[in-house]
Length: 136
Length: 178
Image: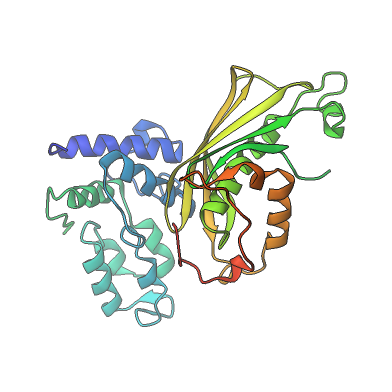
């Protein structure tokens, strides 16, 4: 596949999200959060993964977009909050996601609110080998 | 009322696609309420039949190790309402399958007329993690026999499908396809 511009990647991600979530095109902005703004539920992430794999001809292993294993690990989560070691793990596993805000108050149940459309675009860029895919 | 919304499979190719039929009959009680004097097959039950056609295909593709449940209807459109005397033909196709779920597309036709089409997702639930079972293995097997899956079922190479040895659903998750 020829290299795609960030804009082309965004457009394809947008199509996937419109189809998976039944939202309007205008709602899918780079800053929109998947859960908070677009109303994605857990099963929708599986739907989105299928659509991104097809749209970009990539493979997305379980846990790569959403590292549930870290958030369920008692080594990294204490009293419902991700500890510094856990935050480091999240950063390593999700270089495409901007975790700055989450780090200020790392309550596990708020983690679902972190992922944005732009994070997805950066993730796909990384999978296509087109950028270092680092958010910060 | 029994919750069987396909009458039988006419084709079943493991991991790929399946065709099932549903004959709409005036003997079905619910048609006399939907609607009195104007019996019409509710499209919600057409969708259930489409999901049963695809769901059993997915469950077999996963070796019956998981509870396969309808997780999401991503899209569905209906073109007309089926009536008593119509035979609905549901064609299901597994588009993609991963560890956590399968993505299927299903169409419904009456004769040559497209009646409905849908994109349906199924989740594969690990029964060790997700608590009480919804479908006992014996129930699934009885269902598959009733809809004659083992009469028409074939694997991708054309070999006849045989009922699995039991109990398949207590096998460890993730041990095979998916």
